[in-house]
Length: 193
Image (cartoon, rainbow, N blue to C red; front, side):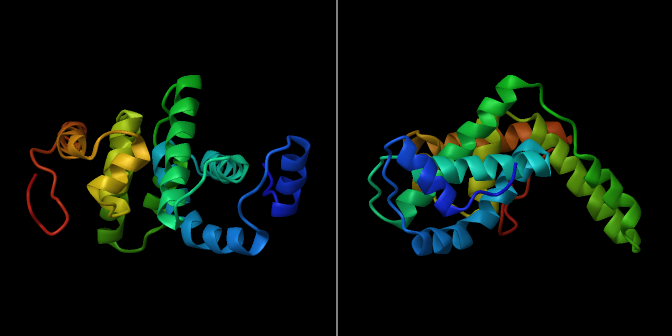
């Protein structure tokens, strides 16, 4: 799927009688701030870089086509991540979970240092374990630890109450630890879960 321009999206939206809420300059700035972390989430969630690119474009397309009134940038960002989470979930419903991407295995052969080889193996093991988690667990862990989102932000992104996030994260960490074969998963800051 090729990358669409805002002008092409505007033309498509005009045909569908859906107003766009961002002009080209505002969208470009928002895209610059959010596309990299969203793509990173989609790549980890799907294990497929090309699919992540397609889902990224679809998420932004849906954002531009929505009639949802946004309270500000954070609200728009949370909406975008919610769309991405749903796109991943929908894709996984259509097909079985994919094993670790071949690129991770190829990385093992490219690193010149022994410690780099071990780090690549650890990343591949983590990617495989994350791919085996339920989509909601992957989203929770990604938003909490890769994005550094607060419980309120995570709740907004996945559509649950903020009070639910702490136990949901604990269960997701426990499931990930089980898949990794570890007894404990280290929290950011060095604390044990």
